[in-house]
Image 1: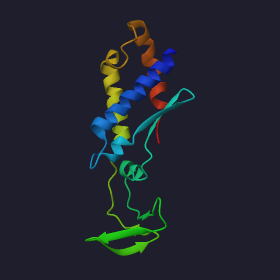
Image 2: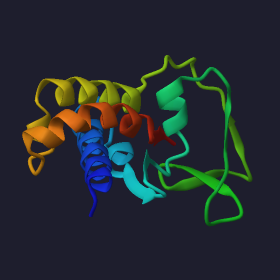
Image 3: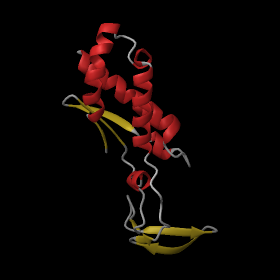
Image 4: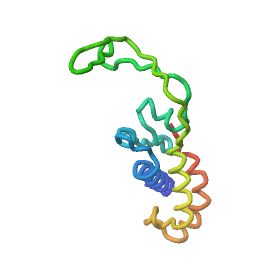
Length: 146
């Protein structure tokens, strides 16, 4: 593994850990569990497959259409009795303020790296660390919010 790959993987892993431990909202923990990292073409992509993550991160005041994943219709039960079956439901949610949890994690990582880079990159020596500071500006910009 070359130095660039090492820095990208360590940085992405650090941002991932900050996200799931500190910055992501944790109502039920499903969003935090869904955060993943992938690597492609000397870039790291940190993201989630949860549809509502974008609404949480960027905020929203638009209604959301809820559709069934595995069945033909949604079913609603109250006290064990099926009341309604619908193909889709328009959920008119309250306006939600943005909670940019990925961006918060990136900002924290930038501060931590500039204060104590050996904490995040223990295999780098001082000569490498000096060179890395310049390289870091490019690396952090290669980590995309998806």
